[in-house]
Image (cartoon, rainbow, N blue to C red):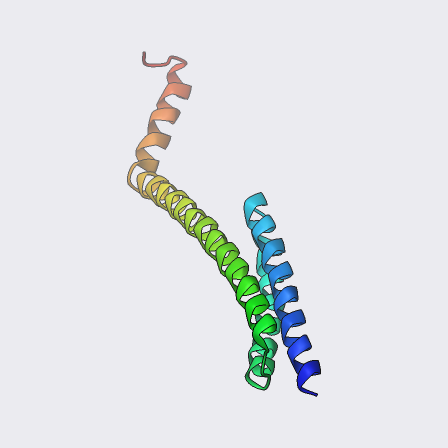
Length: 127
C-alpha cells in the first residue's frame, strides 16, 4: 500500500509539473483566458496531491525525485508570476490612459463639440 501511495505522489507531482509547464507556455503566448482555465485544474490537482502527500512516506529516491519536480514547478511558477505582474502593469497603464481620456472628455467635451460646430457653420478651419 505504501509503495502504491508513494508512486501516486510522484506521479501526481509529475502531472503537476506538466500542468505548470503548459501554463507557462500559455503565459508566454499571452493567452490569459486559457491560463485561467488551466489554473483551476492545477489548483484541484495540487489540493488532492497535498492530501495524498501527507499520507505517504517516500524513500530516498522518491524524495529526490519529488524535490526535482518541485524545483521545476517552482521555477515555472515564478516565471508565470513575472508574466502576470507585467500583464497587471500593462492593464494598469491602459486603465490610466482610459481614465485620462474620460476625464478630458468630461472636462472639454462640450467645448470640443462647440468648436467643431463653429467650423462646420463657417466652412473654414482655424489654422
